[in-house]
Length: 354
Ligand code: BGC
Image (cartoon, rainbow, N blue to C red; front, side, top):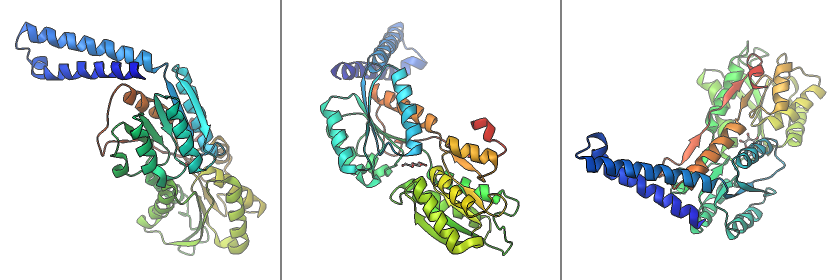
């Protein structure tokens, strides 16, 4: 850790030396200035190389909110593969959906002297506490999947959030429905009647997907009717139960089933099929994530569409941001979030994602 800091500092000093000679770098005033600049540049380069070598053997602690989550499993596996491929010593722990447990895990990693942390918080509301802990221990940290506010992040300049713009995924879900032949109004009564199966409502992804999927319809001038909204906590079994109960209660009135993620949509599909309904014929079904199972169902016509939540892209970006932090980079308030784009997945393009 000490070696890392020293090397990172050397790198920063060299870079700022070069920056001091800024005027020299565009119009060298003298050969002395020019040689100072090139000495500084090569010092920066060699320091940067050493940082890369040193960090790539570094210890990284990864906290996942719970292992038993389909999307986070794909994400976690991608993180492990990328980090190990780069030679890091990686330990990944399961928070079991328990914030107190995750707080202990963070403290244990700190005591063990990790060089960096990648944390998928159990609860967004725990962000302040997590940030103050990692700041107190001066451990560069990348938060993933549950976005704190810009204000919360501004407390620590060695902190980055890597995720996606959840509103975009909601908008894309709404657009998938708008792209159907009847814009979701299967029974032609002039309004789209839907049920919303929500993730954990404490999670901003759940809040924004719920809001923006419907907003895409209303913004397009489509009238909507919400028959039910229930929390399914991102869970397949809960998705199945909620959809089964709603189908029993509302029957053919349900034209669209919005699910905040694919795992719940796969559960909902089981209920839809058990009730003798046919997706894309007498009911529409959309999710988010593009899990393998969901992509297969989109290809088979059993899901109207999904939205790629790019686990590999986010894992790659999380590691890249971690390496910037390890290289000594700090982040200003308001520029601490890095977003990876969502992509609409439909029967027409699903093959590109399989
Ligand atoms: C994913 C869900 C996942 C959740 C975990 C969301 O971005 O879409 O599938 O359960 O993150 O926080």
